[in-house]
Image (cartoon, rainbow, N blue to C red):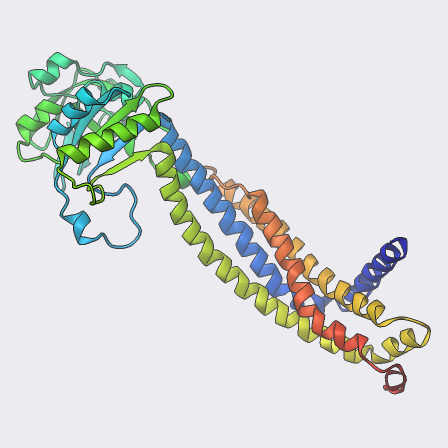
Length: 416
């Protein structure tokens, strides 16, 4: 064991001596490995930060929340005909959940009003295509909204269809850059609303993007039904009782299948999501992106590996006499094999280490210009990059090492 350790250390030292003697050639050889590792580290770091931003946003609403809609929350590829033809969720579905789901603490519906090519304005300030949403007063609790100023509208204002509105942080900033929004009258799609409250800023999205929740205009549900009687496509938010999330999901599923007349052998014609399922859906997208990234990095590793094999074959040819001399003084085949394998692996590991350092440096440089970019290199990416570069050296260095170990010592000593 001790002899093998000494031999390995000696082979590593010889490998460094050889690489230092041919610095430029060694650099060109590991360039493919360098690029492959740099790609892995950079993309994995950005995607990891992107995912964490999404997780923070989803969990900000609450981990006991349940979301119901007729369409998938996240969709990869085109929707099927069955999805496109799904019937809308109705207010009666909400009432059925409220009555029959014992594990549900709160359930509240909402409607998104189409305001494409419409406008919200106050004086000279305007917001194009405002995101106007009709909700019940308990939405403030289910969605964990925090008021910055004023109040949320009441049940009485909702029942009497009063034209009041609560502004998201970005909406308030856009219409009232100098503050003091509460009590003012705003015009949204030709209807006047009194601003009764403004909301605190939500966590920013990936890459510092604006959180869509900050752009909302929240009005009473029945007010929206008065102004827009044709809008009947509901989304539903619910909160389960503590420790009863799974039971609540099962109960809601049973109630909605009955309400929507789904047969026992047919799949659900609605979607139910929680914080965990939304994150899992997003992870599927991240995984697909990672798969493409791994494929591209593999190409870089392959290119680097071919370069390593080529240079190692040249090295074997140039050092044929040295190999013959080592064999003549007692070096065994496995000693020669180990020497050239270690040399190839050291070459690739150096390329991988340079790629890791360059990747970390690039992320730090980018963070100076884009401080909102949440990027952190996960440990698995570092391990993959390091193990990948070492494996390339082992795989592509095997043939040159075997060729060197198979040289006849007499013929090798005659080589000029």
